[in-house]
Structures are given as structure tokens and as C-alpha cells.
Length: 264
Image (tube, rainbow, N blue to C red; front, side):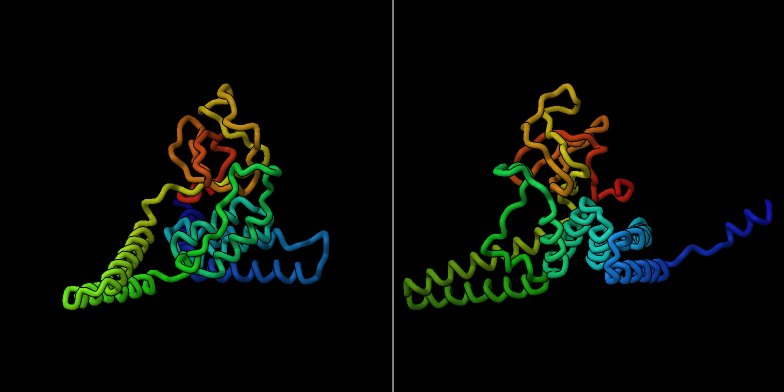
């Protein structure tokens, strides 16, 4: 064995802590470039370097909201909109209540170009119960237990005095408590959700089969940053489901798939 090979074998692997610091330093350098307002240097190379360092950590199995938040910011500032959207979505699967991740995703979605008047691929509007998604699992569980217990207390009282209002209040509180319990279960089983897919280039057509010979599902193209869920992969194509429920095929080279580290 040569001395060089022996040295390589003995060379310690860069720690995650060191990689994280490298990413932070590169990100900071990128922000300094942006603050100079030089149109020829927006720090994109530094942000890509930060993303590479943090991606190495991710490839080692680290799977946290903080890591995805940093990756989302780095990709967004590097001009890589599809991967920015992807990382924000993956981070929110780990911690749906992370306000910074939600802000990052909203900002990234504002840069996705949709065909005028078309709904294909558009994400849903925020619903009136959006505050529930911002609560942590711990708060949801605690609130669910409290409402569930209060529901049974009202029902017990109803059995004693037979007041109709007590019955209604008990049923409502019990139902809301069970609903919150279901939300907790859904979040905890997030790893079983379909892989997230993001369109990686402009002008992608959703097709009815896994080949160019198949007709387009719609003449409306999908552009960079459009989100979907992957149903299956076959022969270099992926079947996806868009937010509106539309199902079709796109080329594997036309998307980034977030639940597979090799696909980044």
C-alpha cells in the first residue's frame, strides 16, 4: 500500500459540525456580496457552496427542519427555485409549525410562473384553519387531550341533568378533540407520505403516459417550482399528482425528488 493511499485511509471524515460551519461561512459570504449590491456578483456561488456543505450533512441521514430551512434559503438565494421549494416542503413535513419555513415557502411560490387564468399546478390558497398547521405536535396533543376531557365532562353532566346544551357542547368538544388527535397522528406518520416532486424546468407538459408518444394531459405547461406528489417511477418517467388532483407523467430528468438524497 502506497503512502498516499495510507494517508487517505487515515484521513478523518469531516464532521457534521464542521460542514455546518462551512455552510454558515459560505452563506454569510454570499450575504456580504448581496449587501454590496453588485449586479455582477449576487453571491450565488457562495450560496451554492453553502448548499453543498449542508447537502453532505443531509446525505448522512440528518433530517431536521433546521437543515431544510438553511438549504431552502441557500437554494433560493442561489437562484435554484425548484430545490428551494422542495427543501421548504420537506422541512414543513418535519415541523409543520415552523414559521420561517412557511414564510420561505410563500416567498418561493411567489416566483413560480403559472399560465394566466389556468389553475393547473397552483398550490391551494391558505385556509381559515391555517393556524392549526402552525401549532407544534406537542401543543396539538395537549389541546386535543384537554378538549377530549372537557367533552366527556360535559357528557357526564348531561347524563345527570339532561340539559340539551350540555349534550351539544359535549359532542362538539369530543369531536374537536378527536380531530386534533387525528392531526397529531397524520404528522407523526409523515414519513409514510408520498415523495414530494418539484418541476425543475419551464414548459413541462403533463402527459397521459410514460413516453413522449402519449398526448399531453393539458396544453398548459408546468414551470419551475410547481409542486406535486410522486405516485410511481418507471423507465425514466414519474407519475405525479398535482395539488388539484390531476394525475399524469413527466420525465424524471424534468423534476427533483426530495425524499431520495441521490435525486437532489
